[in-house]
Length: 191
Image 1 (cartoon, rainbow, N blue to C red):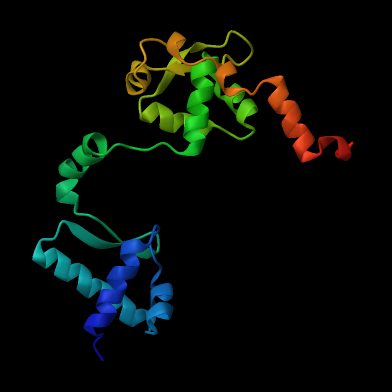
Image 2: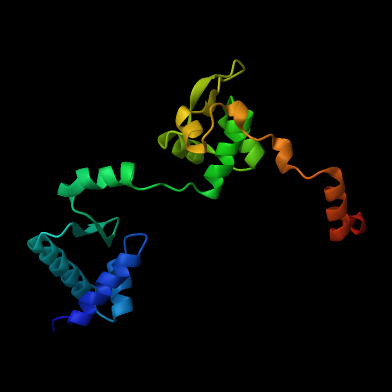
């Protein structure tokens, strides 16, 4: 029994929205087919995309199937990813970037202490995006790498210098506001 056109379309739809490769047994459960039939269907789809010269391929990676751009179009995809797409930063990246901007030069350990979580991956991402860079070494034990912001960071924010960043005091409520918040939250009753 050959899978129907609707089944092939269902595989395409599932793989299109999947963030990770989808394992054949999961596709089989979703489509109510046997895993060997799903494997055959995916191989058939992959061959048809290749024969049609599509800009994408269906590949088996990490134990599952996923769509990815055709390898011979890597130059176009690279150009799009690097130049044509404004990349948004996550909340963690923005928070880390703010810490680096206001506390520079700062080490990863200092960033982690302020944020309360490991900052290694986020700092690496910010380095890859060109917003932070190594600016020196801590003279203390271990000589930790110190980070600061880059000219690209200043350019993106429209600043001439980090001295042009708004004062942190602008973001901290005055004592009267804090007092009113504490009364409104009933902080006294917790003691």
